[in-house]
Length: 72
Image (cartoon, rainbow, N blue to C red; front, side, top):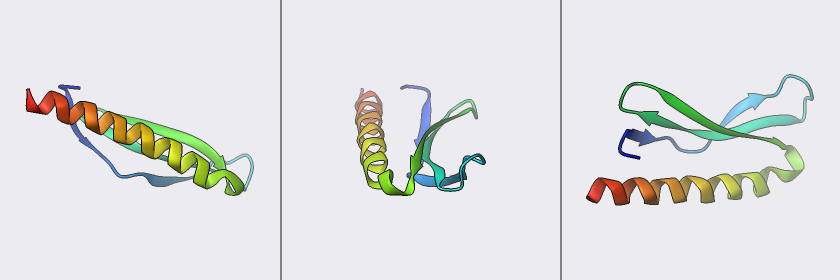
């Protein structure tokens, strides 16, 4: 966590290319050495809300841990 520079908002990454209705949603973790880790999940239009909630919780947990390290 000490290497984390920033964490992006959740955004759309586009279609999977195989099935029109399936797309990616996710966020990126930018590290201080200019590396980027993308956290993505595939969703179908009918389960977008479930995937967004799950990713939001994961992102919030990562941010909380990152902020805790920043305060030390």
